[in-house]
Length: 288
Image 1 (cartoon, rainbow, N blue to C red):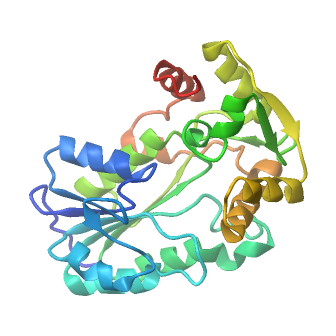
Image 2 (tube, rainbow, N blue to C red):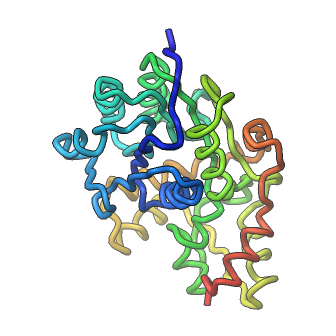
Image 3 (cartoon, one colour):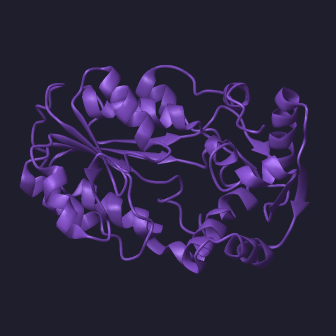
């Protein structure tokens, strides 16, 4: 049974991962609405570390709602955190999950039963409080502030994605949906699959960036082992490099190509197009 939610804008909202790609956007929007908001992370104004449960209680104290950006590790700490959040009085949970969690084989063999995201979803669903699950695909921002940025800037993007396509989703859309779920009625028990409005392959992506910057990075096709080795050479821990490599599987297979309707269902508008994302990022000088 889900208990009735009575969260008001005057009560604190805790944003786990409050300095990350979606978290910092959620924090900015909530504060813009006048909602008391705690940006929780190892470097945020509210100390929080997934690896240190001793930091959880203070972050949760008095919070009415939580946006959960989970740790992508197995076993997932999300179920234990959800249990503690509910015990502390949290009445609304919004979980950042991932597209394809409910599709067997979507991420390859390393993500049985949805992997860590599946563990988190099951915990949120069983929490007894109001919940909403967001399932975004690959972020457009991975080209502007993520793992692909150095390649685009350096003029050579090496990926094992072949001709695979993805409907890259803008992190601003994810944040807008998260804020709606945290502050409005009508989102309880909803699972929102989030994507952009059209699918692109990597050549398309680099063409879009070149139109705005006048400089086009080359797409270098490598195999997955070479990609993983390259990440480790750049300083990524072995485990993290493996996770990034596995996460590319839905692009390689074009599993991320179909357009999803979550932004429209949650917000009543179409998702931002990749061209809009590129134009805004280029105007900020992201790619030099």
